[in-house]
Length: 95
Image (tube, rainbow, N blue to C red; front, side, top):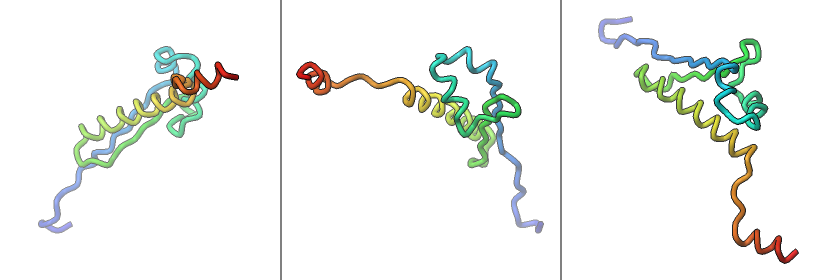
């Protein structure tokens, strides 16, 4: 490394959330979908989220939390059906 090159600091963040602490906080209907997530680590029975996109460690912490949040929201959207539109309700009534 020359004197002109900036020193790099490792700002990678790894967030580990044990399933026994996470699952009581979410509806039981989501448990299977969460275990099927790409973030699930079977050996440690936990959710592991990593981020190293930002140079700032604080920003990477925020990214990890956002990824965890997005994973939970996606699990909810997958398992829990959305509301039925008025058009769909009318079609069902006509059947």
